[in-house]
Image (cartoon, rainbow, N blue to C red; front, side, top):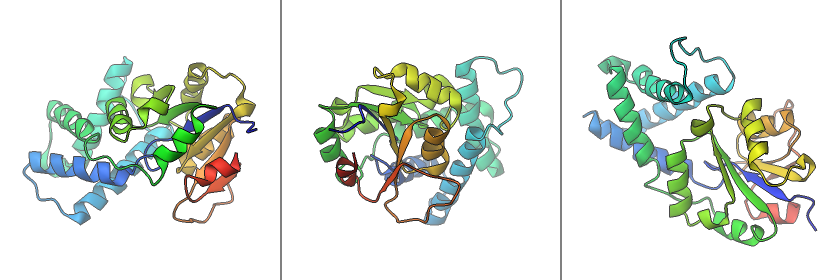
Length: 239
């Protein structure tokens, strides 16, 4: 029998093909701004967005002192990335807020699961507590889980947007720990594709990790996941 009672899954690029979701949403906002979409502009957006949130996750994002509430902080962070990316058209803050709302709502439209995600969760959920831990927005996360027909296997969902902290911040994992029914960290396993958020977060917070590495990337020496898989169904044999 597996020693793991709680399986904590990252969502984007672990259970859901996030590239397709982002591409669809980005195309929608480009059309809304009456700009021209291209594969180059999409790749530029992905690179910018990844770097932007990595700065936040690393604790290096400066939030103005007048922003006090969690809701205002989230609104500021999400709107500011559009102001910075589309600086050539000089978006005002309210327009950026509206653009972000459109973008987040569209993230949950074009959904494609990672190969065998549903089959894996179906085989695991009866004997494990399955929790989603994502740095993505809550509305999009729920839409993705529902449209991929995965939500019935999920007993918990922790989103950075809702709590104001992102993986690998310790505050995110404190809230995650309070969310799970199981309180024994030695019987928890975090599964994710990101070394800097999922694997590092588990390493720093006493939780075993499984690195989902479908592209067979080389593992940098500073990271040491408990196990590595290249296809989702390999997880069942590993645990």
